[in-house]
Amino acid sequence: MAINIEYITELARKARSEGNFEHGFNVIRSQLSHSPEHDALVWQHHPFFWSKINCGNFSLTRRNSSDADFIESLWTDANFRRRFHRQAADLPPRVQLEKLLRREFLSLIGESKALHWIVRDKLGLAQGLLSLTDISMQHRRAEVLLGLSPEVPFGTAAAAMLMLFQFYFRAMKFHKLVSMIYTDNYHALKSTVHLGFRIEGTLRGHMLDPRSGHYVDMYQLGLLENEALGIANQKLMRRVLT
Image (cartoon, rainbow, N blue to C red; front, side, top):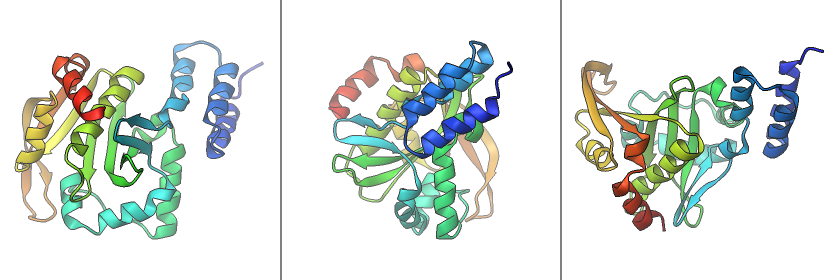
């Protein structure tokens, strides 16, 4: 009897929509036979993709419709949008935004090619956004974006990235993390290099800056697993995350 994958995945999606991530995972795992294609689909349903990532004074929680207020507050700050994503579009009306965030939350990474979290402090208060975009399961690679609210506690950016390294390289078992930084953003460049990223090249005239109307250069930086989890970052993790 042929397996109806669409039906099974819809059952798993319904379970996720009800907050039953473990059940949705078990539905997929119990019904699909072992094959590279099926194993990849089962892996995308693993509950750790929706679990809270918690270390010391900071945590990462998957972005959802309940975060609409916070996201709207960030989007009213032109400086934040410029630091986080200069190409970010205006938000849709509130009802549509909540539906978009909910759909994003329930999607598998094979569908959305992205993962989005809220960075939170020890009290659970939202501090910023952390995203993986352009996720390639074939090459086990993705691009990272981090944007924090003004006046966040010192060390929040490093803590968010270090938590991501643990999840990305150890739980997801991905190989490479990419960061794209405008050449005029010296602070972001310095912070990213400090965490072990290496400049791999300069992309000339790569993006059109909507504010200036000029094409601008960008640095492409890359980080491999052994660099992310090396001795220097392990020491930093013990200092920042505990």
